[in-house]
Length: 255
Ligand SMILES: C[S@@+](CC[C@H](N)C(=O)[O-])C[C@H]1O[C@@H](n2cnc3c(N)ncnc32)[C@H](O)[C@@H]1O
Image (cartoon, rainbow, N blue to C red; front, side, top):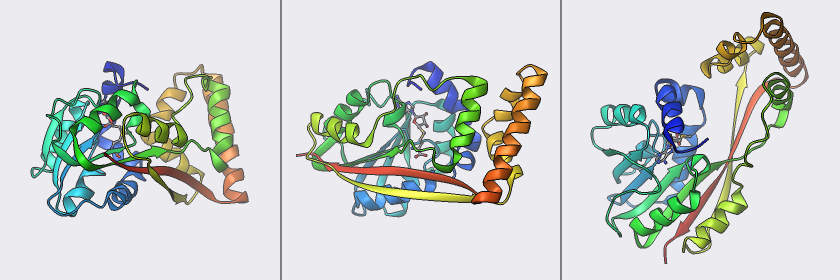
């Protein structure tokens, strides 16, 4: 994933159902704001705000919230949903605000999709006041009990050879390189139990998987569905169907 036009189009397309698909972002957004501990009235900038998982938690704490996102689809929905926020379309790597404009900068699941996380962190540092706080969440790349589904996807669609995802350790190092004080880190896990294999298929359907499968030659599409339901039935019998989501939360202050 990149922050280029391709990335913008991807998030434009996801905007309507974003928080339905990514069921965990609202909980993680609240946790991230708790970790940042902004006092009421703090000027908080949420970068890559999406549908507002982090920004609305900050509003609930009485912050003066500015939200930036690269996707026009996200931005128009944010502005409509939260008239009390300042909402701008923009790039994490070139925010366009004057230096020392914010007390807190948050970024929920954003740095991992950027072409240059380092450039974004330098911007966060620039727009923060001395002593200001940055709080960032990062998806933990663990497949857990859904390893069979990842294997199935790889078998039919290939992939898995792209750039390695940003790790929690690398993010902490980048924060220090950007001039922040040494960060602290917390882990959150958000499991979601699904009642049966059909519910897992429905969750994949929200992400457009059946449409992609149906583009395979008919024999392959049938084989994918058969193997999917076989794998899901086994998971259901063995341990129940659980989407195990985990993230790390990183907090650092500007000197
Ligand atoms: C995974 S979503 C996270 C949304 C939200 N922060 C949350 O926690 O639910 C990533 C968001 O970053 C935005 N984004 C991607 N590249 C960006 C960039 N270069 N600058 C600003 N936002 C960007 C996307 O449009 C998308 O809304």
